[in-house]
Image (tube, rainbow, N blue to C red; front, side, top):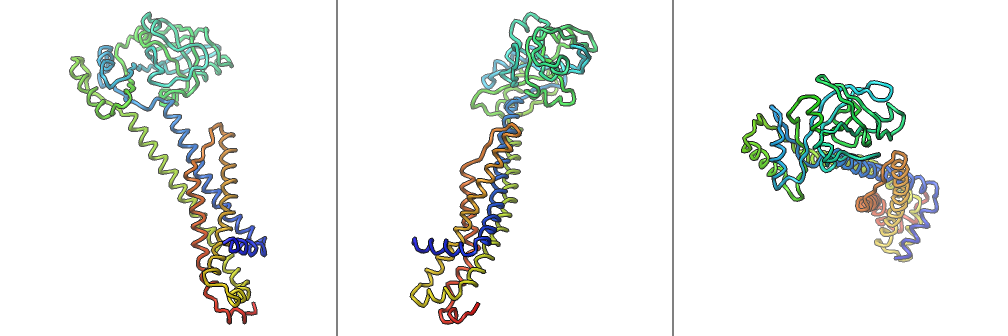
Length: 390
């Protein structure tokens, strides 16, 4: 067996440039597939991280007539509900620093980070005392702080918000990362978010209803069953809830995950076509090798080499070329994923299982494309091969 691999290796070294070019073509095809897999894996992780930061893993409840605080209390008592938070959005103009800025004022409860993920950079988030005392405090996103003052940490600065129904001056108690919640992404046309106690917003604007209630489900809770329980509980509460709208954010996340996986697999399949194309290079090289080594094959058969020996030798040559190309391509593709991820600020990810599949697929492809030349070489008759003049 060792002699077969050695003979195949020596045969490939006779035409080093041709072998190198064939290996390079396979390496390019493999690198493309690895890059696609890496981009898909990094993209999937980035999308999941973004969805997680946006808080897409629960339910959102709204009503045509608006929800009330008793509705919030009812929902918080349900066993399927881990946390529930009121969300009330109002558009306003903020006088902050040296200019006026369009903002979305979001009335939230204490512990909002349990339902919508807020990445705190400076100061603190709103607490129960702020909500209970209807305090004029706020948490702003870093984009507004940078625009108004040229720095992120503006804790302690005054911020005035003018609504259609009134205005209020708040004290900044915290700064969050821009785009760190679902609300920031939904209201992308208004880039500046200001989070204030919902009780304070009710007092300033005069609006007593809640736009929507964001719910985080308990571990193991089935969203469909929880949705039915929520609807039944609200209808039994005696409150005028009008037409209820419940949105399963967790199901949306699963659909988005599925779409990302399908896209990644589709791109991988497209990249696999390049490997099949490079397989024709193996076919060409091995056919040329059979043509050049016809007399050698005749001599080997004349001195006792079996048909199986010749077949194995040429197949070994095809596998060697495939293996070298696959390894080089995986190194190149992996380096591309690493460099690209670091430049873009993402964590490089390469699923080991899929890399193994790429390697195996490349070897199988090489064996398949090398099978015909190997069969042709093994079928040569010694007398005719010895007569061949090349």
